[in-house]
Picture 1 (spheres, rainbow over the protein chains, first blue to last red):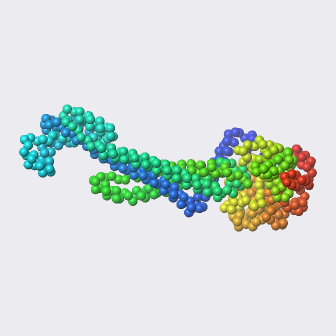
Picture 2 (spheres, rainbow over the protein chains, first blue to last red):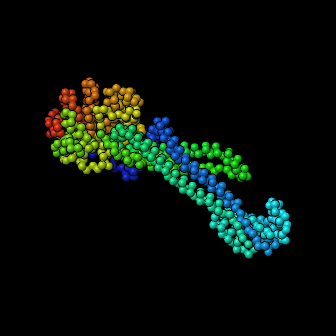
Picture 3 (cartoon, one colour):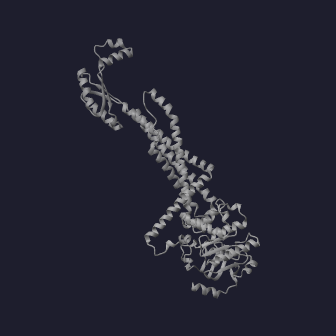
Length: 327
Length: 233
């Protein structure tokens, strides 16, 4: 075909490289146009678009805030893990001095943070005072209680199996009669958190599909509304990628703004919860503070929004754009 | 420029829109296609623009055999064609400028170039003062001229117009046709489908009359002459 409308700089004697650069420049320009144009379209119909974006934002905020909640519970329970203690009942033939040196020996073990000796006399005195069996105890010839050492495991080795093996190790020592470690409720909590985690994954998947459907349907409507424009564009030689580009960028905007709305919702909610949580933590003499989203998670949240928006619009564009032919 | 050899067109619903069409239009020629509605005028234009593909025969446009133009090359092929429609088909949510600029934006021109060419095209149809108006605020004739400007702004080799004057009064129709003649004079091959036979006859150009999908008559400039000029180019 004899080109009537080609520009001077596209003559065939120009090198391949400059042709490549020209195409790249053109592509960049068209991407910029689609990027700006789709933003313009978004701002042109603020009410309906803000509503759509709000739905996306809430759909993103729900699973994200559940994750955050889980994170906080995990953080709190991990600090409980650290305060766990193992009770060592020493054999009755171990006297006070031996018990004291045993306790200080334990403290040198790097898996142990603290080892506090409760002397049998002290234990007896306390028991007499608290139990009300003082007379009965006085009737005994000797103190029936053993020396006890309270062991706090080191904080950095607090996984379930670590604590378990430490308990076994301590129980095997010759001075120790038995070791007690109440792990059941921690285990229950951990399993419970696992279930909650699974539930959040299921919920997130469902809501992500929801976002895909919302974006897909919105893009479908906007393809339908701009049918005339698509037809004319095809008639004047617009390629498929040229036509679908603004729709894909609309999906990107929906996702990005949805992510930002989700971020705002979560941040505001966290701010509202911060005070009461602090008061509660004070009651437990803890300086626990709510963990917020943080920078990386905020970026991740918005990135997930953008990804879902793009995928949703891509699916819609692939399905619906092909059906439109110039008439 | 445009050559049909034994072209048949049957739509999937069995409607035989064109039968055994042989036609040659030289580069730079201006041809009117007339006939009653349903005679195949629009189909002829649609085949040239590859909106539909013909069923049998051979079509060569600008040296390109349309059978060999693969689907993904169709957009590039269409960039050498300008379109005009009876119902204007302007985009009502865009300004006159944006409407006329569309073919250039599609082809990836830079903004400065687009502005220059759009202004030139609008100047040609005497609508430069309306450059920032919306199509709805223009009269029917003005809208049609915006359509003309859009059809020629990318300097196509071929201009196809389907009933371009269908909705206009005689005076405006005449002006529009004269506008097409101006573009034809600068080398654009122009094909106009119209049923307004009285006016077409006064324009003294070649006329092809279709009836029930066949060419009924040729009138105006002899065909032989067109063949010669085409081979010379």
